[in-house]
Amino acid sequence: MLRIIHQLTEAKTELQRICARTHDDQVVHKEATVREILHAVKRQGDQALLQYTADFDKVALTNEDLRVSGAELDAAYQQVSKPLLDAIRLACRNIETFHRQRVPQSWVRFEDNGVVLGKRYTPVDRAGIYVPGGRAAYPSTVLMNAVPARVAGVSRIVMATPPAGGMAIPPAVLVAAQEAGIAEIYRVGGAQAIAALAYGTETIPAVDVITGPGNIYVTLAKKLVFGTVGIDSLAGPSEVLVIADHTANPTHVAADLLAQAEHDPVAAAILITTSVPLAERVAAEVERQLAGHPRQTLTEKSIANYGLAIVAESLEQAARLSNEFAPEHLQLEVAEPWDLLEHIRHAGAIFLGHSTPEAVGDYLAGPNHTLPTSGTARYASPLSTETFMKHSSLVQYSPQALQEVSSAIAVLAEAEGLYSHGESVEQRRLSSPMPADSPIEPIEH
Image (cartoon, rainbow, N blue to C red; front, top):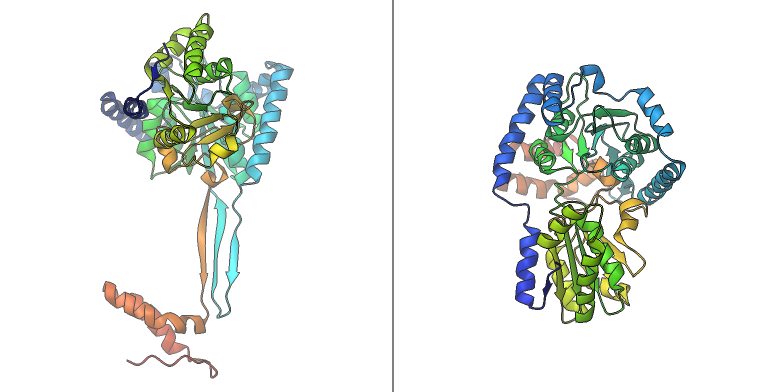
């Protein structure tokens, strides 16, 4: 079931195919549907939300039902076990500790000639967190999106998530939201939820930034509202690439591949190894572990279509192939992972050594699990506090400093044909005589 490839050319072709697996002809049709949803919610507000929830989720809601009540939030704590609550709190602490190391700091630099330059970082006013439903509950997604927003200083964080089975929201999701500091939660999902967060409705406020993963309709909606609001990324199906040498445990590697494959039928699970025996043993182990798997049908589809084992000539070649693929998750299951790390240039998150499965990062290590996918790690980064912040440039010139650069500004303004740009400097030069001790010669006209 897990194909083994020995030829470099074939390996590159397959990696390119897998990277482009979401670029199908159906996307154009789906985008037209999403545009229609966005326009309807923008025009009709809550009415459109309620209609789409009835059509897509088969749940009949009223305007009052959209927001999760305080009683439901309180009751959620009674419906989760103590071990689960403890795990959520541990994850929340670790994620907060990590992201507090990454809060951008404003700075100002004073130069001798009276020039002051700097950057001033401020959070957005409102952030919208989207948490998918469907196949499972995702309290970890709540924490990974909400905690960095809170650490960044966002004053109002709202969450949208689809109802699952009637009006219910999974208790673990509600508990995670509250532990992360969110009490404003709306039971709405899909493209209509993204539209509500982008444009606002009678009940749901418009936000400045929307983050969180979702299906293709959610992703397309985020793409189409970008510009009206900021977004974290256009996340595609999840993926893992494992680089392993002869020291790796094939049972562990197989489990790591299946941990990714069980997400989605189009999730990708790729092994690149320098050991032919390891590749063969991992392939056999994948089949063994799939027998009786709780999500067997889904996981088998993922492995059959987007699972791969590539035999590389060296770890350096494995690293080059990985860099071309730019995986969302990269595991270095080799004897000397820190040495191999020097050859890695593109990856969303890198897990080093035999005792660091991706699941550690998915849940509670601290670094964010909202990562660039489908090759976008070539230029994109994980979600962080910076996602919820922006900076303003600070510039102050003294009269003397302005005099020193006025000639250069005049030349540039003239080259661009922007007369008043030059005049805005010249008028200040004429109305601000040079200090007596200034070495600057007056500009002749």
